[in-house]
Length: 333
Image (cartoon, rainbow, N blue to C red):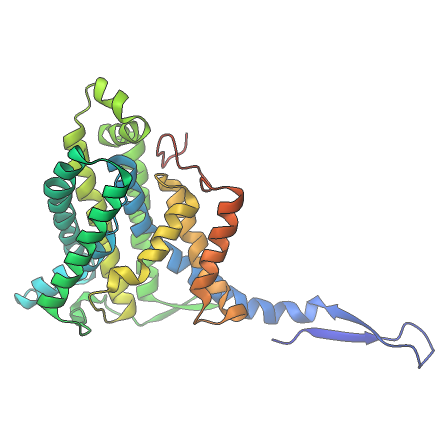
């Protein structure tokens, strides 16, 4: 990238060294042409991360489970669609997202209801939580290997929307129809979560449990029912995020969820664990940092810059941008 430079001698003495000044008027167009596309693509990536991060932080806020198997829930969303396609059912874009989300929801509910729930009633300590969820992650990953193999798979071509490769110009940046639909779907999920958490009885109950589980029990809230619904909702978000990721990368393997789970974790920690609004903002920041750091450190190590930002923030605000205690209020307040 070149920057406009003007040499000024500041006087008639030719022996005097030139004073160099930078002409920002010349530099600005080149800077904008480089960083504006990265900014737009960073927002798109952030929208994709936000869906998965929202599910993870809701799951933790209500169940108090740090679920390392969340990446496998994401992956199963894509494999759920593979199963349906194998049965001869070919779906368009939106039904594919729904089937992927339902696949993740079923897996999340089964494991949360019949494995995590009974186990954590006996062993609720954090260490046991980490060990169990990590073990479940390994088991599911190896099951995927046994059933579908280690090779790459692709979703049915009907899963892509018509004209998915068509390009559009946004602020002078070229984006595809598929990328626009990813952002639209992310906005639908985030707005839907906001409305549920703020205006419905279920959402208020979820927020109350996240704020004070013991007090919610005394007030008569059905913790078991609300926890089960939480497993379904967060599993749906994970599974649909898996579909988005599979469509974006055009092919996927059993490690689909794990490859970007660390970015989801970073988003949640950055925004504040258990804070939905923090997870969304954290995901957007992570997406922007990942893209905007490419010209500086290169695409190969740009993900490392995410953790540089995360470590720096943790030094000054270890609880995250929105804090990690208190009520998980997506709507704020």
